[in-house]
Image 1 (cartoon, one colour):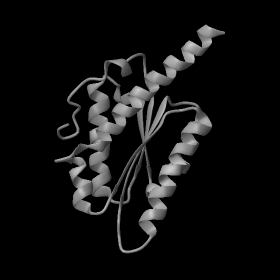
Image 2: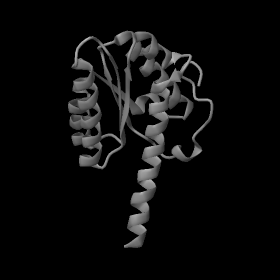
Image 3: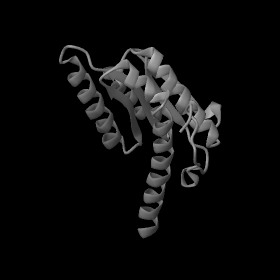
Length: 166
């Protein structure tokens, strides 16, 4: 992927109107802004209207699950994309934040049966994070958006299959 643009189209993910909530952490903003730009470009490339996307901002990656849970409770969204960047420092803070963000995001998805995508970078350095936010390693924000579209399509397919079997 180049500068947040998908190099292929995920045809199976495109369908009816998809309402996307994106939760992005402000901490490490130079990175998370690029992740958000990548996600937005990817959604646009897949014909998701800007009016069907709402961006919510929170302080850091640790807060992503709480915001995602509150969004899921509204029932207004088809998918929640969580974007953040946790960069290792000299303390154990990195382990706590990254593990709890991952666990919390997965808990929200399982609790609500809603696709909640983990688009949180966990890197050793800022340079590694930037490389994955539109740099030499692509844009993981775009990857998260692709995963979101695929999960919406997959879960809708599974739910409609279950209804047909009744």
